[in-house]
Length: 331
Image 1 (cartoon, rainbow, N blue to C red):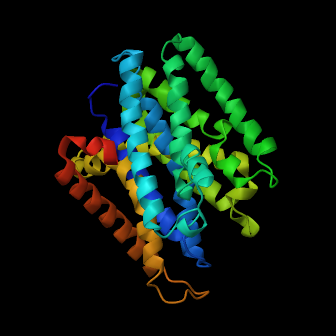
Image 2 (cartoon, rainbow, N blue to C red):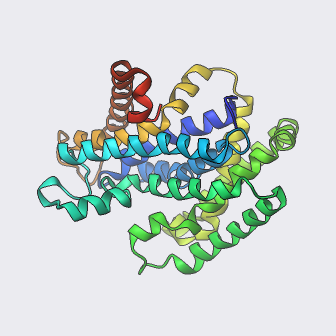
Image 3 (tube, helix red, strand yellow):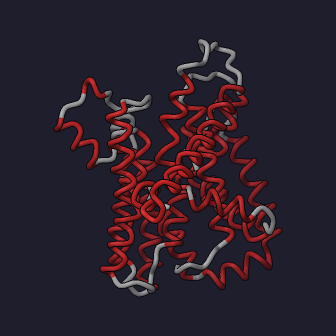
């Protein structure tokens, strides 16, 4: 998509990465607080699809040759991932999948290949194979892309209704292509029809927005009846995701203020994703014992320190390494 700024995509990335840190702050502890559970449910299901939507939208479709694009994406994704994976592993920070004391060479290589050094790094694995497929996708006619997008919706429904059973390993569940392809291709299709879709949303945005809010609230209420949640309603959960992402897109089209802050977090979203998790887990080491009446105060502390610590590290790396910072933090 070149160097053009898209305020709605910047806002989507900004909100998603801040929400990622929030959800990890929440899920890193045992919580029985109903308010905390609802707040986490509201955001946790659409933030990763939202980031994949943004990745599909922003993937360069025409500007670069295949060779140039492969080099660009490899530099953007792999060196920062490998750098922080190895740093965290050998520093033995909190939140590792396997501590340094239990690590051997075979397990280290396995973790690096499948992005398993830190549990949340599965995102990098999925993003890598989506980008790899995009080198072919960018050469297909638009009508074929539309067809693949529709097919990916069917694969998503198949996955959540049939394949995603309790017997499926969580490792495979997090990396399964059927689960993320639809969000990525939705962003891709939106970019192909950006002018037309943007014009429609700007013209009818208020109607779409308030209708989406009503539908989202209805889904939240329906899935909470009798103590249930989204886990019990996989199709409704996907509908909720498909509503929330366009809502943020519309808000991004309306938003004129705070563009500096929004772009700041948007530009650093990958670096924050890579860095924040051990900081949050380190916070837990200094908390008192968590009681059944858990307070959200600890979540907000972890969230604030996760954001502030990540951005401070990014700032220091940029100052020290200069133009080479893209190899270390992806920006």
